[in-house]
Each structure stands twice: as C-alpha cells, then as structure tokens.
Image (cartoon, rainbow, N blue to C red; front, side, top):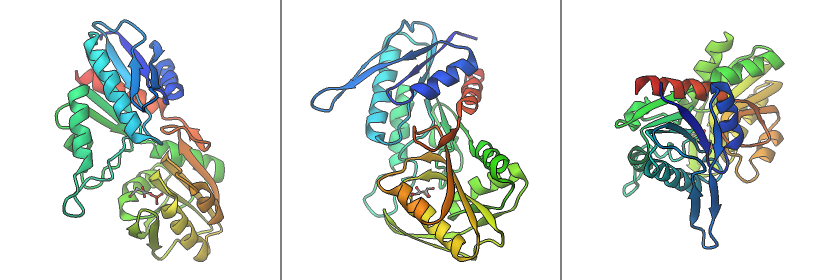
Length: 297
Ligand code: R5P
C-alpha cells in the first residue's frame, strides 16, 4: 500500500494526531488563517507528491469555514501531486437538510456532496445524519465513502461508568442510534416522538421508560432543545437518573444550561467536535474507516 500522511485543518489537530498515532503514520498541521476580510488562507506543509493524504476537518461550530477550508486544502493537495485525498470529516454538516421540506429549499447535503466529490477521492464520516438517505453511498455516489459509528463506544463508556440501562431515542430519526447503543450493552430501547416547530422550539412526547435510570442518545446536540424535552419527559415519568450521550456536541448558545437544568446527570460526547464533554475518542473508528477506503482503492 502507498504511503499515507495525515494532515489536519485548523480545529482537528488533536483527533488527527491521535489517529496518526493509531495508524503509525506521520501527521502534519496545515497552515490556515483568516484574512482580515474573512477569506481563508491555506498552505500545505509537506511534500505530498505521489502519496495518499487523509485530510481531517472538524467542521462543527463553524461549518461554512470548515467546509471551505477543507475544499481549499484538498485542492492544494491535488495541485501538489497527492495521489489520493481522503477527507476525514467526523462531523459532516448540512446532512440534516436531506430533503426540500418547503418549496424553494435546496437539498443542501446534495450540493455539499457534489463539492466534496469534486475535491476528494474518498470520505470517512462518523454517525453522519443519515435519515432520508439511509446509506452514505446514496449521498456520495461518485467516491468511496464510509460512515463509522461511535454509538457502541459511547454506550460502553456509559454502561461501564453508570451500569446497564435502557436507551432512549428522543425522536424517530434517533432510533438507529438507540438501537445500536442498546444492542451493544444488551438492553432495551424506546423511541419518543418529536414535533419541531422551529429551530429552538421542539416538543417531545411519549410514554417514557419504566426504569430508574435511562440513557438518551442522539447523533447531534445543537441548541439542546431536543435533549431538554426528552430529559424533562423522562424525569416527569419517574426516571431518577437521566444520562445523555451524543456523537457531535455542537452545544450552541445555552445548550449546556438547558440540558443540565432539565435534570440530566451527565453528558458524554465524542471528540468529533472539540467540546468539554468529549470523553470518548473516535480515533480508532476513523482509522478503521480510512483503512477500509484505502483497501477499496
Ligand atoms: C435531528 O434530528 C438531530 O438528530 C438532532 O436531534 C437535532 O439536531 C438536535 O437539535 P437541537 O439540539 O437543536 O434540538
């Protein structure tokens, strides 16, 4: 197999470095900064002629900057002779706009996929928000694409710390995560119902769970409204200890306050988005995804 280098954009250094250690491959930090007018400057720090490069980009928090930085870096890598550029985008933004919900809306993830397919020859994501598209290969038809899951890692972490407990999906989109987490720790799972009325206005309904402890899982926590609603419902239905695990903790605005004020005992996330609750690393899972893509090539 050809030599692999791992390079990282501005925010993904720690995860990329850890993945490089797992894979026993060199790591380089890409030079990147913002010009005074907001444009992005990027420079590749090593000779990449003829080698494969895994380009890491943690796009949570500032998805538009992350995307453009990744596109510029991928373009520079190709211009400088890289043989294959594989994007490791642990959190891939725009995946929730996977349909035109109202007339006039774009299916944003389609455009994002098109841009990335032009720029790289493979992509690895972690718990991509696959809802209306069931498989990452339905989104990225033109390049090698692998989606790995952090749910088994999160479920194992929580159960080893707090014991085995039922898993709860706050909405039907999260059923896949709850099923996977529950299978991992051998417990049952429940699915609540969510009505979203606006970006920060959700209502969670359902019968709750007949247990003293429960683990709510989701792929993304953005404003925290979904978890707040689910946690309040479980607490009202008599669940004494509510734990939360998510892959991508975006934690926008007062999300943390909402979550903990609703009675959540602990919040555990992965490091796909740098955040204070990142206690589970996806480095080994991403390394496996990269190896799978390289075997396909
Ligand atoms: C959407 O279905 C996602 O899986 C999450 O449930 C959603 O993004 C959470 O958003 P928020 O934290 O703003 O409620």
